[in-house]
Image 1 (tube, helix red, strand yellow):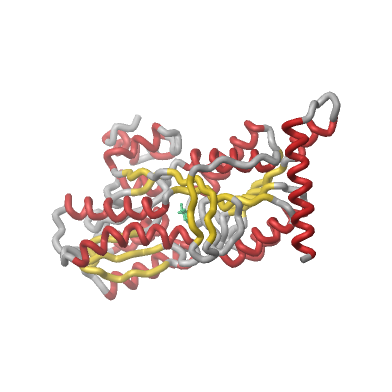
Image 2 (cartoon, rainbow, N blue to C red):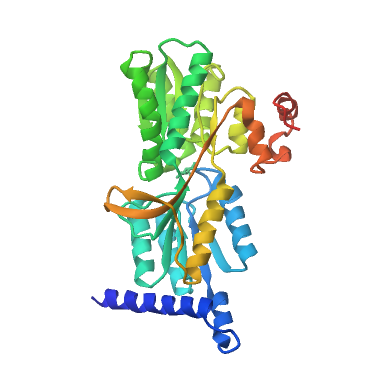
Length: 365
Ligand code: BGC
């Protein structure tokens, strides 16, 4: 009850602020121009190890968008610590953010944070990962089932090109507490199941990798390869997990002969592709994702309602969430160049040392 009144009051304050900001004559109301300044956006990134993207891409592009708009913002990284994640959120809320954007570490702590923000009248956005059972007003991400589908299709293409018959497939899934990992799996299992059912492929070991941890992925894949030495294709859910599998394959001199997938178009993933050790990666234009989320956040911070054209259903909360879902792109040796052309990775980062010649061969200058 109390919570309800508090949040109603807070919403009221936010709504009034919004009206003041857009409707009133600035000369009559000196407070109105100050209102825009009060807009403050808090962002919590999940970690810096499960993928390079969070620090090298998301932070950079979000910062650029907020700076361009001239809004006050704070971006922090929870470094895979759920307690720290919650503390950061509390500090941001008491520190006066009026929009909170999170990449949850799991739905439980994500929900706790979103509910607290909502009760304090802070607008919320689920960035990249949907918080199941959560209360975020918006969700900005990619079509994550499509990401998985590209991975499945990429692996099939590499195995077909290499003329491998009846390959045994190993699956290294992401973190089971990340809804995206579930969606990726849904996408690639859709492709692979057809191959298992028609007896073209053989289903091998299939495991989740807790917290997307790359070291755990290496240990897990080592055990997979020991118990199933015939593994002939690896569906790894992102570049970090893929790289962990490649390192194990290298020890058996199997790298390049067993195709491995990935995701995120990281420098490491792209270099593994140029080396012939990784079959493909999925490029998600994080700039588009960051720009879409920042646009929504800035609008919300000023008391406006954001415009989104898509919706997703939260399977746990059975709630429709307004969403922006962007389109991922498959990257193989043939189009690594596209990632460079899009400005996501630079030639200087990718084409270091031995990779200079490989870049040149792939048409990258
Ligand atoms: C993201 C991926 C990332 C993974 C690990 C997922 O939720 O969508 O891009 O590789 O988390 O951080």
